[in-house]
Length: 161
Image (tube, rainbow, N blue to C red; front, side):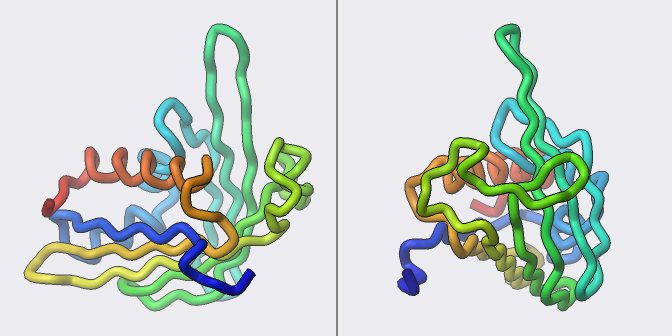
C-alpha cells in the first residue's frame, strides 16, 4: 500500500501560537494531558525529542469492568522546531520491547512500525496543524482515537474554527 490517501490525515486550526502547539507535542507533561482517545489517560510519557531519540508512551483506561494499558514506543526521525515533527510508532510492552500489533487485537494487515508526521504552520497568530499517520487507515479505530485526542487538545488550548 503506497496510496497516502488511505492514511489518516487530520487538519486542525488552533487559536494558539505555533510554539504553544509545538510544546503540546514535545513536552511530556503537556502531552500527557491530551493524548489518546476520550476515557484514556497517559500515566507515562517518556520523550527524548532529539533526532534518534526514543519515546515510550502508556495509555490506560479504567472502568468498573476492567483496566487496560497500551504501550507505544518509537524513534524521532525529524525535528524542526516549531514546525515539523516526525517519529515512528510501534506497540510495545512496559519495558519498551516491540510486540506485534496483532497481540493487541489489531488486524493482520496492521504494520509493526508506523510513522507520524506533524506539520505546524502559523497563520495570523493561530496554528494550522496537519498530522498524517502513515500505516493507520482512515475510518479505523486508530483514526478515531486521533480525532478524539485532538478534541481534547482543542479543549486545552482553544481553536480557531
